Length: 235
Image (cartoon, rainbow, N blue to C red; front, side, top):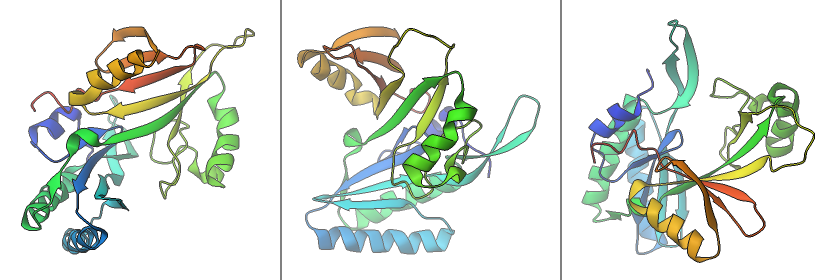
């Protein structure tokens, strides 16, 4: 299936779901583990009917779901097709069905609470160093370039965060190369930034806000608050 751009995802009007990074995410609040398990079982049956399933995590009082297609098709400007991990129409269809199931089970969503962590590493030699990180993070160099157009490290089981490489020039002077990217939903981005600043952090670059806001701690270490505005325009 073709991957869907952010605008198309926004047009779907998925009230329970938010796009963070490459996938759709939802959190449903449950009173106990049994309620969560029954909800997941119903979601599984719906997935069986559609031939597609979410990634699921059950925690204390919540069920977290992620929808993504492992073999979405991306066409570049020359018309060449690439297989990537991204949202497709089957994810939209299943998200809508899961929302209906949640309503049937009298379970409410908490979309403002979803968040995703990714790792970024700036380098001029991603193809050289990527196999090391693939083996270190996942145990297999096959994770390099999986579901992406570059050398990103993506574990097929989702055990570890995605590691992506940002292009940079070679340099002799030491500087921070690793950084953490925190994907949050638009409605809480300001609150998250304000909390970091109140805790002693500093906004060092908001030129691309609200999509990207760079926060530094007191030692100068940087993290980025990320918001996918393309999929939120029509909310």
